[in-house]
Length: 288
Image (cartoon, rainbow, N blue to C red; front, side, top):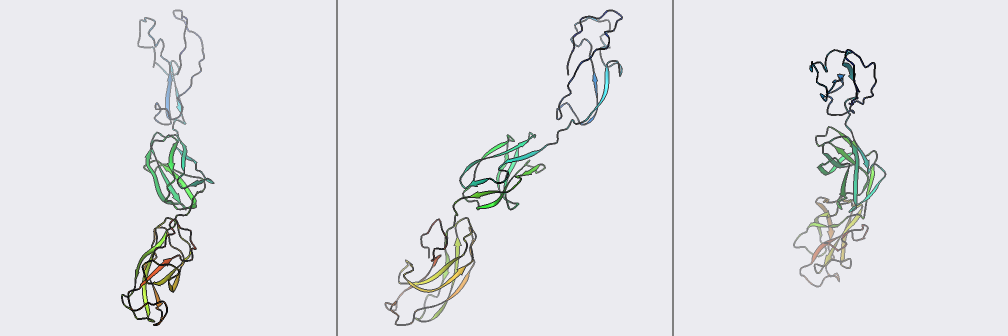
C-alpha cells in the first residue's frame, strides 16, 4: 500500500511519530474475502538493506507497535447488468443492422433475448462475451409491433435486466394468403347445391386482417374473377404461418341451359383468396 524511506536511526533511538497516507484496495479486489477484520502493519527494512542482530522482529510484533486492527466494509461489489440500447422508444426495422448495448461489472458471458409483450419471443444469443455491445440484424420474420424489449442475463439467469420501456419493430407487412386445400364432389348435376370444404393459409409472417374468399366455376384451371361466381365467405383474420382450419361452404351450380356451360364435361371449382384485394400481400399471384 506504500513505503517510506528513513535516512538513518541512532542506536537506542526512535524516529518520532511520522505520518503516511495509504489507499486500501478497491471494492471487488481479489485480495478481499468479504467484509471483516483485516490488519494494517509495517515491515521494517523490507528490502534487507541493514544487517541486523535480530532479523525476526521486523514485523508482526504487537498491536500498536507495528500493526493495527481494522474492520473494512464495502469490499464486495454488487454485480449488475443494465440494458442501455434499445431501452425504449426506439424504432427498429426488419433487416436493419443494430447494436444492442449494455453496461455491467461482471466477467461472465451474457445471454440476450427478445421479448414481446413481456413474453419470451426468441433468443438472440445464448452466450456472448460481456463486452457491452452486440451486433444484431433484425430478422425479416419477426412480427411487427410496438411492444418489444431486450432482456440481458447471465446464462444461468441469476442476473437479469430488461429494456426500461418498449421499442418498435417496423417494416413492410409480410402477408401471403393462398388456398391450402379444397374438396368438392367429383360429379354433380347442373343446378344442384353442393358442399365444399376448404382451408386457407397465410404463408407470411404477419396477421392478415379481414379478407374475402370467393368460389368460382371455371372451364379450365386458371381462375379469374371473370369466371362464374358461386359464393363467398368472409375471413376475420389469419395469423402469420397459420391455417384457418377446415371450413365448409354450400354453393349452387348454374342451372341447366345456363350460357356458362358448353356441354356435359369436366369443369373446375376453385377459390380466389382475397378476391377484393383487401390485403396487401408479398405475393399477389392468384392462388386457387
